[in-house]
Image (cartoon, rainbow, N blue to C red):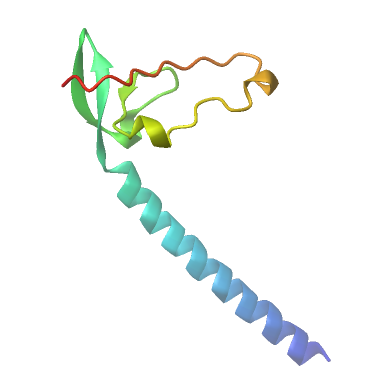
Length: 88
């Protein structure tokens, strides 16, 4: 009875280790991508990993696909600004 249980636990641990390793690789890839951060009156290209809470970034998405604060009544201190103009 002990052998089947230990086999299942070992296989589960190996599977979890593999999934964590893949997630770590994907996080590193995403964190090293670049975005535009507002610094000193202009947008500067920085890596995602250098962003901090409160930084202003430029996000390019189609406005028709964006849902911003659909559940705002549950948020206490939340603010968003969305500029949907097509300026460059």
